[in-house]
Image: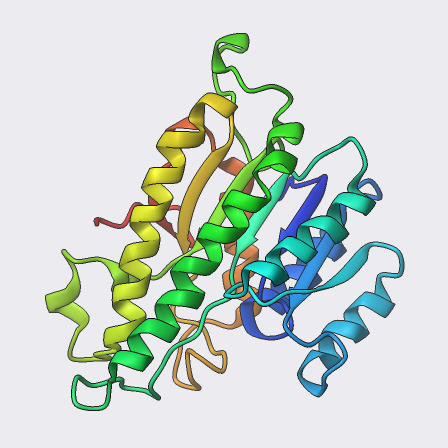
Amino acid sequence: MSVKLEGNIFVTGSNRGIGLELVKQLAGMTGGDTHIYACCREPEGSRAQALREVTTQYSGKISIIKLDVSDEDSVSAAVQAVSKQIGDGGLNLLINNAAIAKPTFPGTLAATSKKHMMEVYETNVGGPFLTAKMFLPLLQKAAGGNSAEMHKGDTMSCRRAAIINISTYISSMEKCSENFHLAQMYAYRTSKAALNMLTCCLAEDLKTHNILVTAIHPGWVRTELGGSKAPLTSQESVLSMLSVMSSLSNKDSGMLLDWQGTTIPW
């Protein structure tokens, strides 16, 4: 699979699982002009050890940014930190990967509280909303202008300026009856369905700025969240997702796709 991504790339939730693998593969397959901003809540903590090791391995190519996506002040500080480093190029790709699931699997109705619902929504929806809103000036800078009429054909891509929201197959309302028995996950499902609507809204709002916005389901992946029975490794999922991201264009903005590029119904 051909993967062609470049420029300044910002990844949230990058200390473990899919986020960490995104940073690893992006660092390994992109050229010298690419810089990756890898974000996590506690860069100096024990859970960020693997991320620090990757940063050392690819010296000068990765900057670790302290970020709690549910905290507006934290997002603002991250914007300032990135702005100081990024120069005139702007931000080419924002990957909203950070997410939580509460309560523990399977997340039944009886086990789910209002507090669970609000905490999950704040991170899984409020987080991508804040990052998209507050990083917009840097994305616009990368897009090279804010008028789609300046260009013809496919004006949007992940190499130019894009937001990728990591969603899930179980956010699909049409498919709920097929998979609900496998994992109720009330808070997680509903938050990701809301993320899908955020994706649609941003796609409509930002298309005149030539900024692509797409949601991608990474598959059922063997991570802390996905569990040990998941069929996909993080390496397999991320390699396929990056290939899909490389091929995205105008027609894909506002869509929900899986890691292989297949459209998932709402």
